[in-house]
Image (cartoon, rainbow, N blue to C red):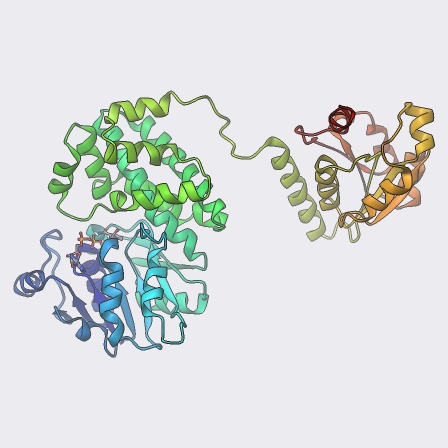
Length: 490
Ligand SMILES: NC(=O)c1ccc[n+]([C@@H]2O[C@H](COP(=O)([O-])OP(=O)(O)OC[C@H]3O[C@@H](n4cnc5c(N)ncnc54)[C@H](O)[C@@H]3O)[C@@H](O)[C@H]2O)c1
């Protein structure tokens, strides 16, 4: 049994307090609104969670000291705009050894800090040392958690042992907690999904169907992924509970107030009246300024988020905003260029092969002139090296170039060799003096993989007969030696 303080007596604070109390913990819930505390004390029930009784071992207080002092865990469950002030008020009563967790979802608009970062900043000691803060996030409607309906959530903290302590406190047979160390990704997903839920609601309000909603969820996730990648968050988080999981629930559930607010707006209710009707925090609207600022800062395209911002803050009608999205220029669904995907696949396949013990040292060879060594060449060398452990470059000699290709190089063989040897992917440079030497090189240098640009596709398949794998790598289209030579000739 532990003593736990919950800051915030909204539906989420109460649902979590009930869950913890039913685990036998002694829970104290604080609210900044003394009237709310009086009402809860009188009714032992939150007005938005009808029929859900607040257990006897939940104390209710308007004194933040009572909720913080001597608690093993202090859980922040106030809406995002109040997180900083609440942390500031709690600070005098919080000690370094207490666990701190945040269940609110959002990003502070002025600082662009996530809410765990806001709490850390406020609770930092005089020496500037910040306490670890765990973010609790996932597809978790208070209305369902309060009725013990099965739920899974994420406890995220860069220090996994801290996340695991929070996990142990919350875990019940109906409430499954996963840990995650990618707290930035978790918090970013938690904040942005509410904006996508507003968009999904607007679409429903306009009378659109499930197709539109599925498209919004998917393309909304693509926006979150783009921004998250730019901010250095982990890929796995997007497909996890706080990414795809929370997006699904918030865009489709009748409990989602962001979705409900969007639906009202889509059906023609002006924004202020829609918010008044909801009567609870609509975090998607709070998250918009930070989302827009982050997208600008990281140079990321976020058309759905921009469309929601246009409706909420710039008076654009929902119909106009949706049509604007549909009229956007045609795109490729894949975010990365095909050549990068091919490269990644080759690297993964190679890694798998090595893991299976198919090979120990893998030697790769490539051939070429590599004149005016440019990033197209370096791209090729990087990808060639990634296919094995040891990269040999057979560099065309000046004689071979002239006699066989009638080509004169800008740099001499010696200079080209020196440049190639300076590239960290290249392990060995040997001369290419004839067309035929490739077959013998395979055996002489124990080559496993022969690599060449895909403009030669199929031309060297005969090397497979020598036991080598033959890989044609896509070229980097933006640059070529011919193009540079033309520029130099001007
Ligand atoms: N409700 C859910 O299902 C749910 C689930 C997961 C996460 N969350 C997140 O938890 C946070 C709280 O959500 P909620 O649903 O409990 O919100 P809510 O709208 O029910 O909470 C309102 C509460 O905010 C608190 N509050 C009001 N003014 C305050 C002030 N000046 N200072 C401090 N606190 C004040 C009060 O306790 C009030 O009851 C949000 O960030 C939300 O996104 C909610």
